[in-house]
Length: 234
Image (cartoon, rainbow, N blue to C red; front, side, top):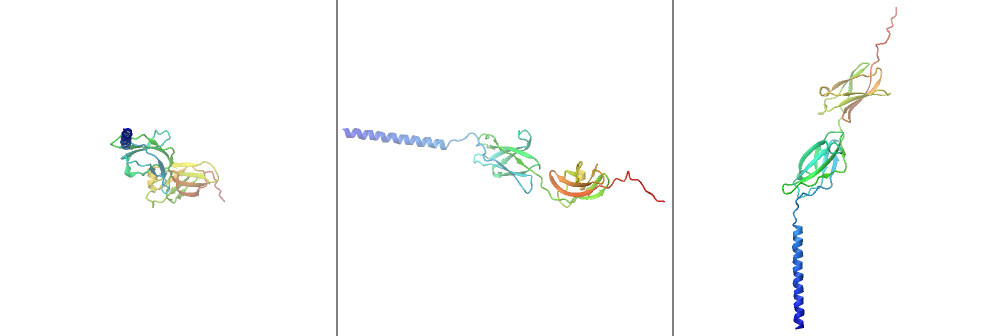
């Protein structure tokens, strides 16, 4: 009789253990099959400027399988109020490369998107990237000069010869720098005149696209003959 009771207790214990194991397995299965209502926030954001071009930027982040697209927003300011780019990027196109304006600091954020669930929280890049100008030499030359001006021209051989923004004339021995903002007509003609210079002065004249020098030349303005006294012999 005592042996039968012991057997009954053991049987009940084994049955309870089996039930507990079954419940634990069921609970584990339920956790692994949990469906998220929101996309996971992108991680490991990065931005890399192409050294060869100076203005091509590659934006990258970890791609999650729950996202089909990403909303990439790039800003001109740290406060993120001035948008430079707002684009939807398919997951298959990450990392994403785009050409931006040179000589500009950029900030960005990204959000994961899916038709099956809500968009993720915004992931904000905790740094910035800075583009810069890189251009070929256009071989600036002086075509004419007066006491107060220098006429300049540059090569049209390069496909992007019209990509010039300004000319700076700096007196070699010190003095007032003269800058000329170039018009589209001057850029197309590959020629411009820098006026308002001092006579008999050596200038270092440089052609620019943004911060990139596209050619430089040293040149003297002519002497001012307006106050010269005419000497005659009899």
